[in-house]
Length: 227
Image (cartoon, rainbow, N blue to C red; front, side, top):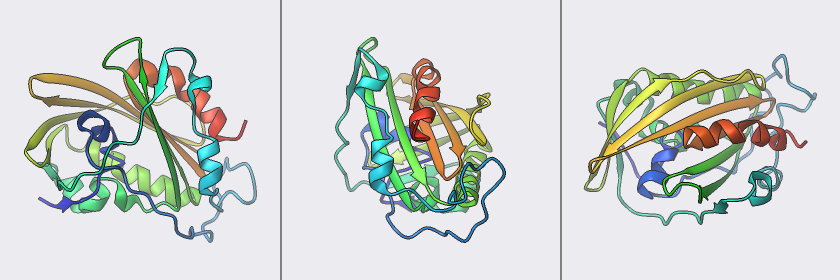
């Protein structure tokens, strides 16, 4: 069992469920030497967007419509996050299993609560790096999570039982990944959908209540593409 003091892309939805530590990002130079893949729209597709550009392309309340309220970033805690019972995630290492090891060049994130249901939330993460690096990084994490139908995540004294199921991904962008995450803790069960779409040098990840994810995915992708 490996430990990490930061939370996760692969487990980023656990940040929302348990209000764990803030998800760490990187702001370093990208590997711009990777060749653009088929479907990349511009010759500069391997050059990452700036953090400012990514933040401008995040969804906001006016994009989502009535009933959505932006949530503040969760407070940071010092509890370690441990993955138990998933060898594939442990093999990737604690940082990758909990997301910070993805090491993409740029990142932006936003979360919303939906007043139509007390338990409905949706979050968006945008990453930018070379297309090859984005695809390899997110693909490795999704493959590892889906290899473990059930495992546990521990943070401090809290232990969450997790289940993972593959979900059909929509035919959008250049590459797609989707899964359902089932969290069980304290007698409560929460189902979260997580869908990732790569379009050129941008990776869009929408996580939250399945209906909200499906309803906002195309809008998020259009805005991430600068439309």
